[in-house]
Structures are given as C-alpha cells and as structure tokens.
Image (cartoon, rainbow, N blue to C red):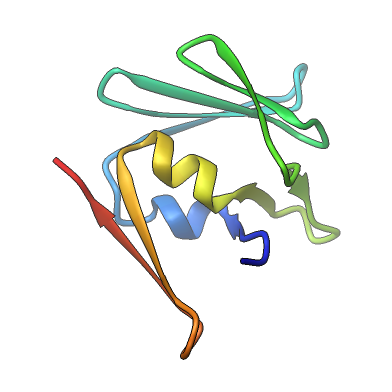
Length: 97
C-alpha cells in the first residue's frame, strides 16, 4: 500500500478531537479522550501518550502551508480500523468502540 498522507483538517473535521500546533517544536498534537498523539514536522518519530514510536512516512507542511500527517498512524492510534479495497482504491475508516 502506498503511504497515505492526509490533510489534518480534513481528517479531524467531523471528529471530536483536539488539534494543537506548537510552533517552537514544529509539532502537531492530536488528542481524543485519553490518547495524545504528537507528530513532528519532517521527523520520523512521533509520540503516543509520551511514548516514542517510528514512522515510515514523515509529516510535512506543503508549499501552500497545509499540514499533512501519515493517515494510518494517526487513525490507528485514535482507535480506527482501516480497510483497503485495492480493486477500486477505496480506504474505509471505522471507529472501533
């Protein structure tokens, strides 16, 4: 599967989660319930509740100033199940409760 990088705003638009940009760290913190996921721009490490993990696709800011994060990591850490239908290139996210 290709690396999926998703615009942060689009992913969180309809979800009850908080987003926080830290200019000094160049980081984005996304939180929901007791889960805090922090991504660092142009770095391969991220944290989940302060535990460091490694990415295979780094977050970045596009030339027009939009922030993109690896969708799979963010979604899975927030409790989503990801299903990929490769025949029609559709990705389904389901929130597992």
